[in-house]
Length: 101
Length: 141
Image 1: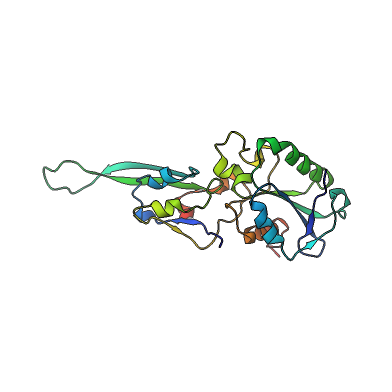
Image 2 (image 1 turned 135 degrees about the vertical axis):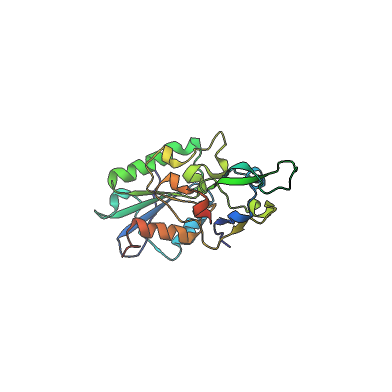
């Protein structure tokens, strides 16, 4: 059976980095920052949440093992049916959030 | 040099595809070429003049193998300057899972000009058929 691409469900991603660290070929890049959670009750300690800035998969390194899909605790990655199509530049092999949706 | 096997990809003499099979991706090339016609030509110099040629580098290129790979591509490009080179699979594109290995070339574009990259480990045979269609402008017909 041949594999498709891997799709990012951005809303589920918490920038926890588990996929990037578990990836055997280190093909996932994640950038994020934290923002304070608004509307806390008066006197509460400040709490923060992660905000995803960049999620990129370098398809020229990916070996489509699916470990990232398996490991994601939040089901933010899933198999897509279509394979990654061929491109004419090496830079085109890295897909950002917009292309991973 | 041993002969190369040129595939008459569409069976009409318009496009000849040759596989430089170095590792497992070559199995997908074989799947993609299954049922197609071998041109029966083993020297690039014997191809009909004006032929379109696609060279598919499928598999891991180790540093030890860079010499032969460059020699093959140079010889084909000397005979057919318009020949397109395809980096088929992650290894040929950038080293793939072996990008951190001491002995693996991090993509054949470090050695020769590449016209198309097909990601996958391995890519499905249809991905090769699609990129050959695009390089031979079949996709736009």
